[in-house]
Image (cartoon, rainbow, N blue to C red):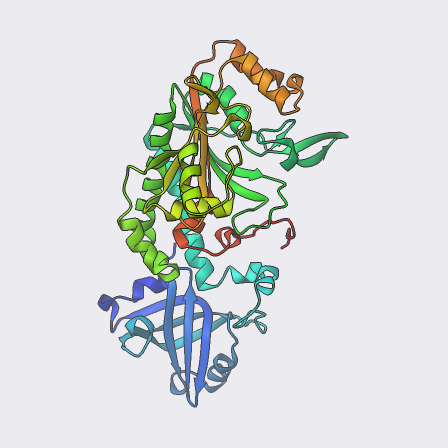
Length: 433
């Protein structure tokens, strides 16, 4: 990068007081007082106040600057001055202002509706709030890569277009594929289970698609999935792998985006600072008992929804693992507990404000059991022949999980709705812009 130009965050430091700097960015706010123009200059790193005096510029240039609207792009040369009246205690007194591109009237002002902001999402991404969230999002992605690679896991990519279901046929998005009907992937898992026998322990970060018509604040039809599959793992080791990832993400966000997190959710910093393992573990049956004691009407054999998950997490000061669900409410590939075949060896990790963050399990290795479960769920086992082959030729114990990245960001930032955890959200009623 050309270091003749500085980032805004660099000049917000005493060491630059009195020095000449060159900045470039966009007008975030503007205010005119007679022969002075006060500009808040924004770039991707922050905002600084710029004062433009009439006697510092040619008269025509000063009038042009005075008429600029927010989001106009400019270049500024000036001197950094310490001024406690300015945001962050510094301002830049302009000696020259070059107009790069004057903006039209910006369609986003104050107090717009959620729908208006979604319709103008391509412009709302410029907001300080979205910049903070997306900065944290970037850190989360990097932390996931760092965690798995530090443990020797290799990155593996699977197809987006797939001929079969992984998480149930009711939530598949059909695609016309040269006169054949195929689907957008719900998960990489079935392909990952084929790959581990050659590549070993693997992970991925990739989009997944669920045609759920749910309009809850935590559901998207297109979301980013961090998934992992490991050889020889049992359920306890898989729990440790999930807990380790969540703690590593929290640590990296504190290291790299503390200020951004404070800007969004100030209490989040203290929460993450105090977050440590081990997380509590309870069984599905214990969760049912806890919910009943809290006055909730829950029936054994029902899956938990948002109200139940939020209630459960409110009873703990840390995320909580819920294990040993009834097999009927979990996917066909989950291994049954040998001590109680009505249960599966798997878990959901639930976090405050959001609910389920991770879903994982030990995988069933017996081909006959898999075929029986597929038939129970109304699936034709012949469609899964290639997957069943992974059990016919030297299968070994293995396990894996999936983590919804937008839910992680929703949890970290205490967001009211998951749509703000992704740049361009896709929901049942929104596929634009």
